[in-house]
Amino acid sequence: MADYILARKSRNVASNMVHIFLNLLLGVGSVLVTVLSGSPLLGLILVLASKWRIFAVRSRYLWLNIKSNLVDLIVGVSVVLLAYCAGNAFLPVDFLLMAFYSVWLIIIKPLSSENATLAQSLIAVFFGVSAATIITATLDPTVLILVTFLIGYAASRHVLSQSEDKDFTLTTLVCGLVFAEIAWLCYSWSIIYTFGDTGIRIPQLAIILTIFAFVYNYTRRAIIKYQADFRFKHIVGPVIFGAALIAIIVICFSNPIFNI
Image (cartoon, rainbow, N blue to C red; front, side, top):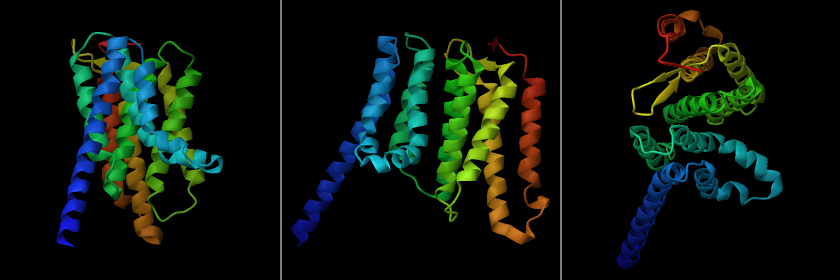
């Protein structure tokens, strides 16, 4: 019996090591092939191929499976597109993206607590909107609006799917519409902050929507927690802080180094 337990533990350790290695290979490889090829195609194929389980279900479960994995897909696709937009020469941002995506796959993604779920959603919003803003800079604004709607929908659904509320379709759609509206308002003056020759580009819209997503989810939690006793004082701190931070960013940091 003891030998069986020891063998089982050994197999579990070996399995975990292989799992970590494959995720590390994906995190580094998806960015590496994107930069070396000068095209996002190979990187996107790697990301989609790693999610083969999403599609290995009956057709009636396919859409549900896709929705359940949207946040992970958004992060993976965004990492590849950001690496592509940085150019076909290795820059500090490429190594940062490799490290981040590896940490996401190995440490952040498997977490399932309420706070971890919120963090995963905020990360998807930040990276998803960053990639969408940069990649659609020369395209029709409708593309950015549709993509931000999808990101808002996915981020909201990711959080709400962990809650006790079983019918959250309307809430997720409203969140997506608010994201799309903010993206439409910001499109005419799209600002991207750059940091020297590092290749790092951070769109103002990504910061604003990440702050909004945090305040939105904090407010939702407070309403559920206090229910009939809910008062504005329960959320006044985060709301004022979020509004003030967005106001400072818009008013004081709208003279960008790089403006689309």
